[in-house]
Every structure is written in C-alpha cells, then in structure tokens.
Length: 400
Image (cartoon, rainbow, N blue to C red; front, side, top):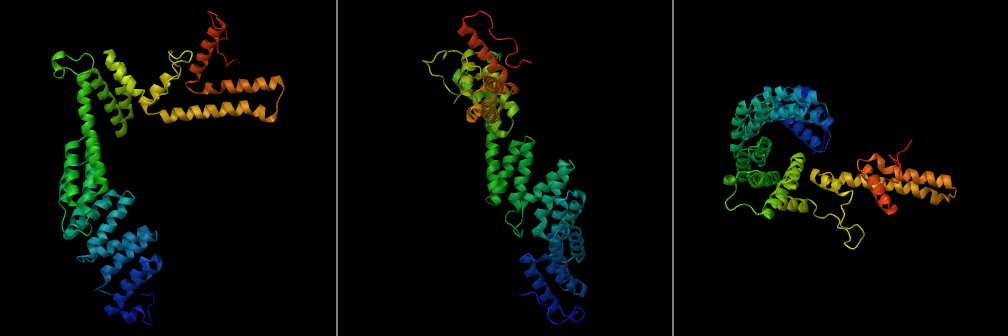
C-alpha cells in the first residue's frame, strides 16, 4: 500500500473510522520499510483526527516509530497514551514496549512500573514476559525472594504468549544468575524447564556449563582427598594412585580455567607441583608441561634445566602463554631490527656496528624474563672461559 492520503483532511475524516484504518495501514507499511518519520506523521493524523476505534493502535504505532527514529522520549509519551486507552491488546503491547525502552536506559523504576501495567492489563499472553521483567527488576534491587516468585511465574508460561522463546529466554536469564551464585542444582532444573518449553541454543550452552560445574565439584573432591597431610582414615578407600591424583589436579585446573577462574586454576597447578608425594608432583608437572619443546638429547647441556622453563610453566599455569609469546616475538623483532639495520645500510664502521649490537643485546632487559636470559649467558661464558668467577662486569649489559 502506498503512503498517499487522498484529498480528505483530518477534519473531513473525523468519524470516518475506515479512513483512520487506511492511515494506520499506510503508516505500518512505511514503518516496515524504515520510513519512521513519515509513519509517525500518519499516526499523528489518526490521533489528532479524533478516532476512537484506532486511537490505541495509532498511539502504539507512533511510540514504535518515534523510538525507532531515535526520538525516545517522544516514543515513551506515545506509549503512555496507548496504555491510557485501556485497549485489551494495544495497551499491554505499549506497556511492554515502554518497559523495554526504559530498561535500555537503566530507568529501572519506570521499567518496573511499565511491567506492572502489562501484568495489570490481564492479557495472559504477555504475563510471562511481565513476570520476567519484574523478576529482573527485583534482582536489580537485590530482592531475590520477590524475584523468585516472578521467575516461577515466568517459567510457567502460557500458550497465548506471542513468542515461543518467552519461557526459554526467561529460563536462560534465571539459570545464568543461579550459576553465578553457585546454585548449580537449581540452575540445572531451570535449564531443563526451559528446554521443555522449546529448543534454545543458549540453554544448551548453560547445560554444558552446569556439567562443567559438576565436574569441577567432583575433581575438587578428588584433589581434596589427595591433598598432602590428609588423615589416613579420610582418604578414599584403597588410597588414590599417583597417576589418578595427578590427573585430577590437571583436570580441575583446566576446568577452572575454562570457567574463567584463572587465579584458582594457577593455585591448583601450584599445589599439585609442590605435592609432598614426589610421584604426584612429577605427574602434575608432566601434565603442566604437555606440549613443551623437548631438547635434543644429544645436544650439549640437554640434561640441564633451561632458563626459560620456569616462565613457560608459570605462563601455562596462569593462562598467560599468549602474552609471553607476544613478548618473545616483540623482543625478537626488536633484536632483529637493531642488528639487521647496519647490514642493510652497508655499515662498516666498528663503532656504529658495536653500538647496534649493544642495543640488540639490551633489548630483552625491559621484559621480566630479560634478567634470566642475561644471567644464563653470563654463566655460559664463565664456563666456556674456564673461570671460577664471573667474566662479565656486574650489571652487564645494562651499564651506565
């Protein structure tokens, strides 16, 4: 339908509800195609023209058009006008729209008032969404008891709801909050209720998160049982083999990292690698170092600990390996650039070449692991020189 109004003026159309219906249809077409300002003009003609039958629909349409055009306060004013009509369909829809609009800008008290208006309208189809909104409002002010009642009503749903996602969406919201509070069992029950109402990817994700939490709980029990100093009468029946204990430490640490609790994961790794049972400690360290570069067994010093290994272990335990790799690549790039520039420029002067090499050697000093690299070279040089004492001055290469 095209946005033409014919020759009739609003005054001529007063009392002609068919003309108002036509204006509303045209306005809906315009809004659907993104012409919100023009749609708003037509809705205003209906409101100013004195239509009774289409006043509620026009006010709701104007609220949506104004909001979509970025005129949010004007949109809310129109929504309130639609609510005041008391229309059984358009009034609760306008209240619904107003509530979401207020929530977007953090006007929680206004949003709660609008959700109450939705509920008070008596429209069963919007009741679950209204309870969901009121549950969010109660949660925001810390009233979990009131919130729980609204959550339950939101999850009860209704066959008259305009969207099949109403209950699953509420279930996802509620389950996320329960998981954050550590109420895993209740979260799982809520997820299952949501899935009974309809398939929902977000709920499937949460169900996986529930399983992760349960796994963390179980592996935590095993790790506690294997902890050093645990009384013998509290140990698991038959004891716990070192490989199983080491595996429990690893899985607990990695699942905590998956959850996003990297600090606790690092603590578990640390406790495992310092375990008083050497077999357990070695097993945990072996799992922590899985994938690390193994030196050539025939290379000189292959059986010696390398200076970088503590940094790699710490990075793996703390989940900062990408950061460490980034630092190393940044240092390598700087060293390469400072050493390569004289080569590219054909530099032959000894002083300039020495200065470039000194800059390249100093590059790692700005990183936490730089001192260990310098000390490693110092020790290698001392051994190569066959000297019992350092052959480099103290503080090299950062002198002066």
